[in-house]
Amino acid sequence: MSDFKKKVIYQIYPKSFNDSNGDGVGDLPGITQKLPYLSQLGIEMIWLSPIYASPQKDNGYDISDYCQVDPIFGTMDDFEELVTEAKKLGIEIMLDMVLNHTSTEHIWFKKALAGDKKYQDYYLLRPAQADGRLPTNWVSKFGGPAWARFGQTDLYYLHLFDVTQADLNWRNPEVRKELYQVVNFWREKGVHGFRFDVINLIGKDEVLLDDPTGGDGKPMYTDRPLVHEYLKELNEATFGKDASSVTVGEMSATSIENCVLYTQPQRKELSMVFNFHHLKVDYLNGEKWSDSPFNFSQLKELFHSWGETMSEQNGWNALFWNNHDQPRAVSRFGEDQQYRIQSAQMLAATIHLSRGTPYIYQGEEIGMTNPNFETIEEYQDVETLNMYQELIKNGLGPEQVMKRIRAKSRDNSRTPMQWNAEKNAGFTTGTPWMKLAPNYLEVNAKMEQGHTGVYAFYQELIALRKKYAVISDGSYEKYEPDHPSIYAYLRRLGTKRLLVLNNFYAEQTEITIPTEFVQGSVLIHNYAKKKLEAVMTLRPYETLAIYLD
Ligand code: TEU
Image (cartoon, rainbow, N blue to C red; front, side):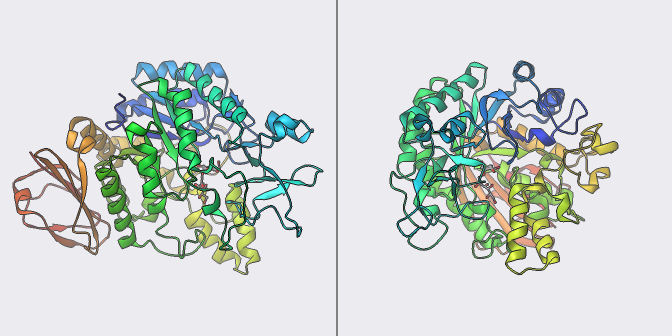
């Protein structure tokens, strides 16, 4: 049995982590160089965003060969060296499996385009509707319709993401077999962890239909019952053979009910799931590119309902604030100026002491912030660039659009890792592929390691999870759900209890704690020690956890 409940997983976006050869792009040897840094933090598994051969239209989530390393990241030897060196430090590798779609540069798609019927059945090709409309009214997640003309034919291929990312036909058993071989190819290289990209979109119906609500089509292809069947098959054919494997499914627009089913151990689907509901609490009417502050009561309600349901029904969550698709949490849910350190620490405690497996996205452990670039030319992400055009077309002025992009762009998290205060923050000796956030003189790993800042707090949280079973295995219960500024919860395992209090605001506030906790001990705290009292006063972004044995 894998001990993924005690582990903390660290996500690396290889392009922006560490460049060893001065070409401006992070690479595999660069990651190997930084393993001691990760080991010191207490990390036991690193998830690498895609490192495979790719035209890089979506930074590697558009794969042209699943079994090759993209030369921008190095060679297969470099990968093997990384696996070996990591193992010496007790660190395992989790790879990102993008199995819902391939790049249109993949040999399968090219053969399909050349007329090979076998490969045409690898993708979702459909004719236009009788009245000439596209096969369905679905919208691509990166803007525009989800269908594009298939070469010179009368057919269209489905692309739920970019036009260069063609959805695979999972109903074809040959396709599934090929993909299982890919997973096994990497297992043989010593990989024990897999993150499955948008994996709840693989169970598409045989007949693809218009969204009757006139919406974007999501309910027509998300969490279909077949997903569970395919996951069981995938499990059995690949990682299920390895008792130490750790898997996480990235679930787009999913439901708690399905996530319970995806993760209950006896169902043999996945170890855990990422869901994104808590990261949509600043989407006005569900619209990502809106301009709106986050809704705290909605955030708490989501944490509580997911925490309690998964706890009661024995499902398992991946806990996270940041990844390569999200703005920096400290700029979004915290305060990245005066209270940068305190709010980064508070956000860390909220998820690291909760029930599930916590993930850290590179730079989060040093409190990295959004870069706030001035102009659209400084942004690179395909989604951001498409949306810029779309929002301008919809009538917003350029400055209004830039304000939204500064808050929402996926590039917020993709700026190079800030290692030190030297040139390019020590990320590269060359010209970085993407501009750095300008604050690297004050915010960098070297500085953070030098004093009791964000890094040391993460170190402490990671160590606590390994030591206290109530953190790794305890149940989850909400506490004072209606408090206007504190997010609080209780963990329980046998007679042991943990109360976690987090002030999400810059104003001081009060909360009454259960009387027995006045006799408890403080496990972790981001302010100087204070006496436990029935009514506790919490300072700006204060977090503390009280333990009762
Ligand atoms: O993302 C899936 C996804 O639907 C979102 O996170 C999406 O990028 C975001 O909502 C847009 O606002 C995964 C990967 O994490 C992402 O980087 C890829 O671009 C995408 O799949 C396609 O492979």
